Image (spheres, helix red, strand yellow):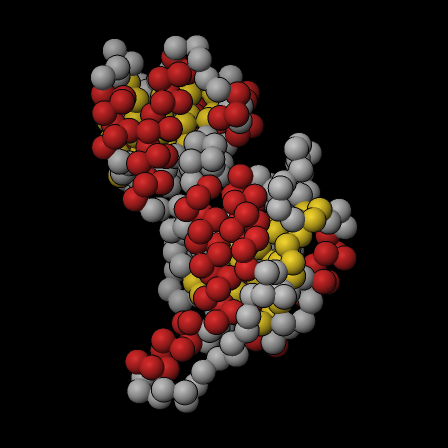
Length: 309
């Protein structure tokens, strides 16, 4: 019986799919020694948080497929997988609803100063330290990345009477998204946007894609994709100077954060610990999808939309 290592935890619904066909070993994401040991005789692996390095692969001679419990794969040694002929799959679209909703929640929280207002009430100050409060109606929102999540954000913003545009640096979007005007010149689009929301994968071409100081003064920057899309040191300086009015970040260059974040607290910004995709329904959906990708691989029936390598 083939052995599958699940580096989780993942929802039981996904484990049920695997356990009917395979020997399944569940390993906690932070247990490096056991993960490396179990991987040595594994035919497949599901990865939720844990990175997979080229060194891991050198000690995994039987590995045939890596299934990501999610859509990002910047923590996986893709070139090493390709060299070995090992498949890499993602749960394409499984987290789109949750992340799009989280993104819109962050946009509204920063505009309405909900974090600072909550702190003011809890401190017994009532109107004492209220941050600047703005409306979403009439604002120009630039969505960078027009995949399923980016399109989900645009769709949800359509009812707020704001001006939605998008820029997609790497995808030939076909058909064009139903919501939003396409902007092909990123510097020009950044200079005009009141709110910038990031929804692209992290790779060489997208690292530090957005320069905070190239944005419109007072801009709100939302990032629920990957931390390396914006230089956090530059973002901290821009926030401190007031050039950036607020940020909503679910992702960071270093995860988990060690100690307090370097970003100043201006009462409008919202920071969450990479949880945008972790709704109850999405956790189940991603577990089932990741497990199904393993089954489909061994049945010779992988869906092209889920395959990275």
